Amino acid sequence: HIETAQQKMFSRQFAKTVESLTAGIQQYQPPIPPKAPLYAALHTQRAQAHLRLKQYKETLKDCALVLYAQEDHVPAWLVRIQAHHGLRDHETALDEARDVSSKFPQDVRLRKAHEHADFCVRRERRPDYYALLGCSSIASEMEIKKAYKVKALELHPDRLPPGSTGERTRE
Image 1 (cartoon, one colour):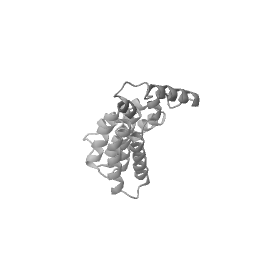
Image 2: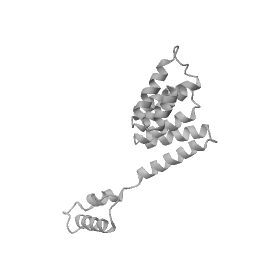
Image 3: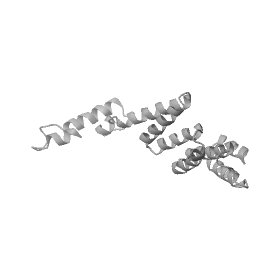
Image 4: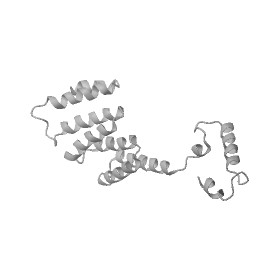
C-alpha cells in the first residue's frame, strides 16, 4: 500500500493516495504503535494528500495524531503549518512556526516556514488599495486612474452632506 500511495501521490491522484494510505494504516494487525517511524510516515503522507485536496481539517487531524506521539517529527509540523495557511489562519501558522523553529533552530525548512508565515501575517495587515478603489489587482493603469477619479468624486468634501465628512474618508 505504501508504494502504491507514493505512485498515486507522484501522479497527482491525491484522493486515491488517501484511500491507499488509509487501507495501509488499517491493514496492520496489531495496529502500528504511535511512536513507530512508520506510523509517523504514513499519517504525514496522508496529511500531505489531504492538504493537496484542500481538506485542511483532515490534514490537521492527521498531523495531530503524529505530533501527539512524536513531537519532534518535523515533516508533520511543516504540513500542519501549511494547513493553517490554507485555512487563512496565518497568525496560528506564525505562532507554531516560531515555536517549532525555536526548538529546532538548525532546520532550514522550519526557518523558511517561519519567514513565510511572518510574511503572510504582514501581508494580511497591509491595506488593500485595489479593494479601496474597487478594481482588480490586475487592472491596467488607465482602469486604476479611472477608479481613483470615481472614488475622489465620491468622497469629495463638496459632495458630502454636512456633518459626514470624517466618516466616509476614514474608510
